[in-house]
Length: 315
Image (tube, rainbow, N blue to C red; front, top):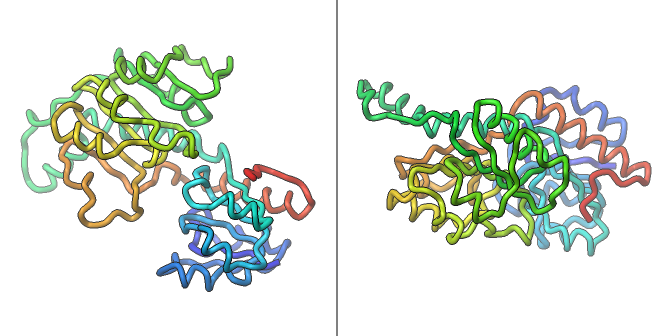
């Protein structure tokens, strides 16, 4: 079996970590992402199994991979990168790596919340440029404020725990209500009530067809003008044009964003230009601990596939 990593993988830090896969087949690991779609297709044409980081396996690419039978997306947002319907038509099993980094992503979201509400990034840049203007950077205390958590899977529940731990009241919304999604003093509510009542809204929802654009203009305009919006989930969940409009008009205090429509963004990326926005380069998942978990889960999905079993299969 030829096993291909077409665009590298941050979760692989040392070559020896691939030895477990080498017991299954030949591993071809590309350190750098492909320059374009033709190079991606060239790398994948002989592959039987693929571990995918950020490249897009659309219908055109999949049609050029006649031997491909297995894809593991390294993460949870597979729907943004793999044409699952086309893969299913071609008999390709698609898997992913759930629950690999809930704590890492939630901790990053908490870091963004603290940074944007206390203007840490802007204050750092100001001081590095030689300025001393402490009165410019008045922030807010989070203790006693209301945190709205959208999506109560493993990341959302960890976010609720962290928010409660610093003294925040926690509101939560989930598409699938269950008793285990109401811990840490969390109060489940409607999306409309959550957006209207929160001082900080943080997004931890998986991206699917039914969640595309769920965070609409009508929800965003419900937020208080002194509130903050944080997205470490997926950009396609949000009406980002409406978010930009509200931030520019001062109808939101600020936003922190770790996920972007284009990665890397173009030079004219609008969120680069807004002074009340903090952006990071999609690093919420990127810790040593989460990487080790991701690789372990990914390898287990292929091992299960070779035994004729289904582990974390999405089609």
